[in-house]
Length: 431
Image (cartoon, rainbow, N blue to C red; front, side, top):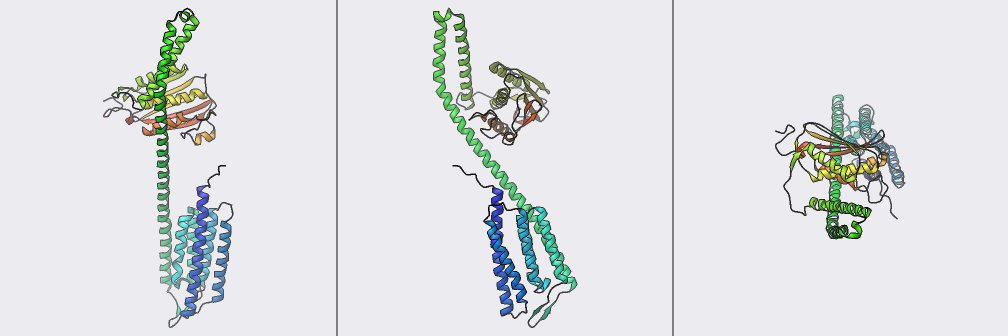
């Protein structure tokens, strides 16, 4: 039985919560050690009861967070923010009882801000900065004096405290801005790598399908040739020649066999297994007219075709022809018997092809996954490769395919750069 993979974002939030728990245990141990050293070894007068109470509260809270991480509920970003606010509050309390801003540990606030910049959404990050800044300002006015041996009560001038505040706010703002930018760049990098891996997987899938199609084409060549010879013999035999209906059936079978042989030859040509022919230069209108005429003849379907744009030279591309044919075939299967609309428009840079059918349209879920293999509205296993191949051909040519539902049907739009089709050195003016 297959189990559903955990959502990556939920898994990351849970791991972040556990990271905060581990860091908080280190903070508890570090604060306890610092208090004991300052009080026991350095003879610094500290309100131990209050400071240890704060430390105990932080330890209990962290234990509750550890138990929370075991629950199956998703960890919200607000929970991480609340945990960091508790850390800021406890740190503020500890600093309040140990000299306020004169305590060198006051810049531990920046650690909380840095953690928030990595873990939290922007609104929570800036809220954390505001909370830390307010705590810093409060500590400049209210704090228990820190009495040091042989020094007396440590105190800072107002100007120095103001400079510390400006330094703190500046450091916190720069941390938030630049850590946010770095995190965004890393996320974009990860998204790009994921897209490249997806493309590599799709291209590998296409290669496997190409090998299978090429092997099938080789295997089908011999039986098709045998059937063609047998049908030719039947056509010359007297019993069949004397029956008009049988003769018509044989002629239709011969036409269909010829069509199958043409398809097989096309597969082998696309796979590069026939003698190479030099690319043929034609014009966009001639290319589209020939494609539409062949599609109408072989599918015996009605297609309303129109061209809008000044004719220009292009290189005849088998992949482009197959891509457009796949889109037209999908539209015909979605609305069999209904006329299709095919509109070609282009300007100096872009070719836009629109195919519209009068079918039921794409299901909403399919529109989100359009272009992935085996996504089909036909409800038949193994279908959905036509649009998948079309998407990859368009991407290889530097274009894209988009689909959406329109009143009375669906529309697929193919957008291609003309630079990928026109002969080198020739533009839309043909010069």
